[in-house]
Structures are given as structure tokens and as C-alpha cells.
Amino acid sequence: MYMPPDSRLRLDPIDEYTHTPEAAANYNESMYFNAFDAGAGLGLWLRLGNRPHEGHAEMSCCVYLPDGRVGFMHARPAIADNRAMDAGGLRIEVLEPFKRLRVRYAGDLLLMDDPLAMADPGSAFKRHPKRPASIELEFEGVSPMHGGEIVALDGSPIVLDPEQAVYRGHTEQNMAVHGQVTVDGVRHAIANGTGYRDKSWGPRHWHSFYWYKWLPVTFDRDFGVLLSIKGRPDSGPHRISGNVLRNGVYEEVIDGRIDTDYDGQFMPRALTAEVVTREGRYTLSARVLATVPLRHKRVGGDARNYTRITESMSEYRCGDLRALGMTEYCDVVRDGVPVSIALEGAAP
Image (spheres, rainbow, N blue to C red):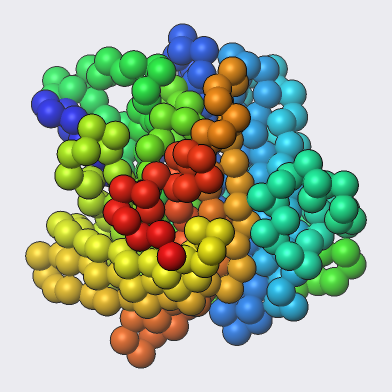
């Protein structure tokens, strides 16, 4: 994660729980999880973001089924405070800080044969059926925690501009997963699944992201890769961060590159990533299996410019290892073209 000058990270088990919201009107506290069973061809991700000052949460649930269909739901359920991560049918419980968490969802999913239909959510919700779903998963941390709250060197809170900030604190972790997923009456068991999670808190506007590419992949209990590359509107050098998990220890990413093959709609189809740590160099390749495009429009902004996040379940390989994982790309889209592609001249 990017660290401003004269700052350090502070990590405390209490950060696993909800915080007292600061005064910023756009205070956000969110938790995200993904889980995969490579043998079954099943994947999913869930996110709950509390916005207590705005009186609602942001709840998203997405399941990639083995037959190629995708179940998706997004809602903004009302909340009165920030005391729990429990809204819209999604509940997140901390069983043991930094080690074990439980995630449950009960509600409908929009069941789509073509997940790209979410590029036009209004039409997608009219055309596709909603079906009941339930998810019950337990997550076990298999890596150290990465991240924490960014504080000044003396431990005091740093000053953030709420209009530009995306978080005050941020944590991530590689996970092992077990449980079950039921969609439209069909049950899928996850016995030895892999996953990843993150948490953030502090002021956030989605449009404060310019562009980023985020590859969180857990191959097994002993090996995982996280590569994050963020672009900057000031045209400065990309901010490259992440880590490689090897046998319970993190190697810090010091450099990285992602080369992506896009289709005509600027959706990722495949990628190759080079990841460099002080201990070694790793090459990842991925084939995108299914993509759900999501968008966030700024209130009162230009309708031609919005933030798009593509959530792609992908098949990753690193040497002889294979795993399912996420390929998450976030871009400001201007006149139909994602800014990362326009700036790099990578349009197909």
C-alpha cells in the first residue's frame, strides 16, 4: 500500500471490528472476501461497505457458477450506525482477529447467462430472473496480515482530504475457505477452497480512484501473490505494491508489470504479470473466465465519465501451480475508453 511521507503503519486486532466513524460525510468501512474451489470451477466475492453518515450500506454479492452463469446482487440497505457488518442479507463476523472470520449471505441473486449484461444494470435487472441464494463460509488466515492504519511517525492520525481519500486504514490477507454455496436450490460445497480478503476504513469516494489493477491470488496455503498497480492523474510513476506469500512469510513486492489482452469493449481477456521481490522474480499468466462490469457515477457529474470496475474470475498459473483468482481493474472511463488504456495506448 502507498505510504505518504513521514508516516508509518499501525495494526491492532481491534481494527478487525468496526471503528467509530470520523466526521467526514463520506466515511466508509468495508470488508471484501473472495473464495474459490478450482476443482469445481466455482468462485465468488462479497463486499459490504457501511456508510453510516449517509444512512446506508453498499452490499454486493457475486457467484461464478461452474456452468458459466453468474449470480449477482447489489443493494443499498438502510443502516442506522456503524456497529456491525450486517446489512442487505450479508453478515460478517470476526471469530478470532487476524485468524478466523465467518461470512453469510441470504437473499436473491440476479442469475445471468452473460455477466457482461451488468454493463447496463438497469436493463440487466429487468431482463434476468432473480433466484434465492445462501452462502455460509468460514475463512482462515494462512498468511500474516498486510497493512494497517496509516499514522504519523508519532502515532497520531494523519490529515486526509475527504474529497480525494480512498481510505485511512487498509488490511489484506490470504485465506483458506470452507463452507457451502446454494443458488436456485443447487448446493455447491467448498471443502479446501482458497481466497483473499481486505478491509478499509476512512473517507472514500469511488471516483477518487484514477485507475488501478489488482491481482489477489492464493494458490495454496503456502503460496500466494498480490500485485497492485495504481495510476496517478499527475502522470507520476505508477505506485506498485503487494507481496508474495511463501511458506508463511511475505516477500515485499518492489516492482511489477501487467500486460493485458482486451476485447473490443475493453474487457480483459488474458494477462501476463511480472512480479519482483528482493528474494526473486515470479511470472503469472491468467485466462479470464467471466467478467462482471460495475460502474459508479459521480452525483452531478458528466454522464460520459464514470468509474468502472471489472470483476473477473480468472484461471491463474505460476510455474506448475494453478488456481482460480480475481482480476480486478478499476478505471475512470472517459467517452467510452478506460483511462489506463488511453494513457498507455493499449486500445485493441
